[in-house]
Image (cartoon, rainbow, N blue to C red; front, side, top):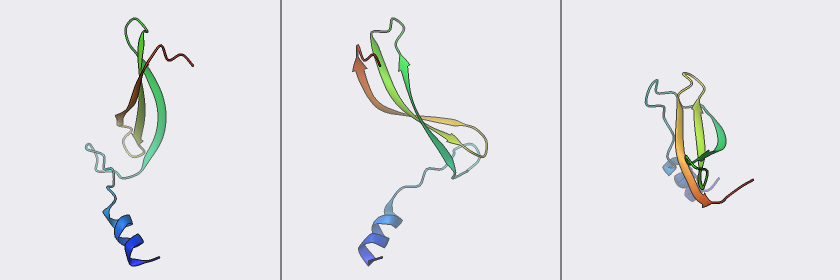
Length: 67
């Protein structure tokens, strides 16, 4: 591994659970629909393996996105 690759790898942010300081997560993808079902929001959920806290991150929005 080159110096540049090691530097890039070290610079990447590491997700930390704000509740228990855990660093191991399971990744799930999901969708949250609006009240009337017109719009939907795609989310990426990171679930802490230590305490089970779910961190949700926005992955985009779609209108009439039925699948």
